[in-house]
Image 1 (tube, rainbow, N blue to C red):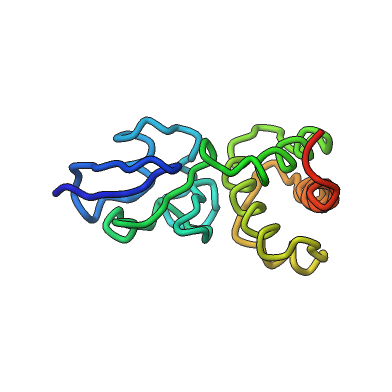
Image 2 (image 1 turned 135 degrees about the horizontal axis):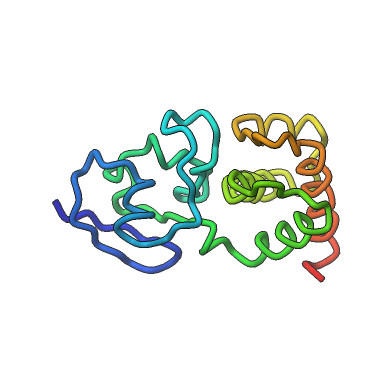
Length: 157
C-alpha cells in the first residue's frame, strides 16, 4: 500500500504495510538511522520523533497514523532547537553511551517549544517518558535549562 508522508520537510511515498511501525519505515525504508530502536514497547523514548509537532514513540505508531502528516526525525530537527540543545548537550557532557540521546533531544525540543522557560517540574513531566540507561538525568536537566537560556538570548554559540 502506498502511504504518503512528509519527512523532514520532504514529501515521501512508501510502499509498506499500513501497520508497519513508523520507526522501521524511518530507519529501513527511508534510511534515516538517527532514530533508535530501544524497547519496541514505547517505554524508553529512544525512538521519539515529532508527528505534526508532537513527540511520539515511533516504535508503537503505525505508519498509517502518520499518513498525510509531518514527521520530523533528529536529522530534520529545526535549527532553532537543534543548535541550542546540541550545544548544551556537549557543554553539560550529557552523552555517555549516547543511545537514548536523539530521543531525549526530540522530547526536549517539544518541551522547550511549549515551555520556553521550563521549571524543574516542567522538565520532570516533559522528559518522564525518556529513559537513560547511563543515568545522566541531572546533566540532561542542566542542558535543557541552559538551552532555554541560550534560546532566550538568541541561539547557539
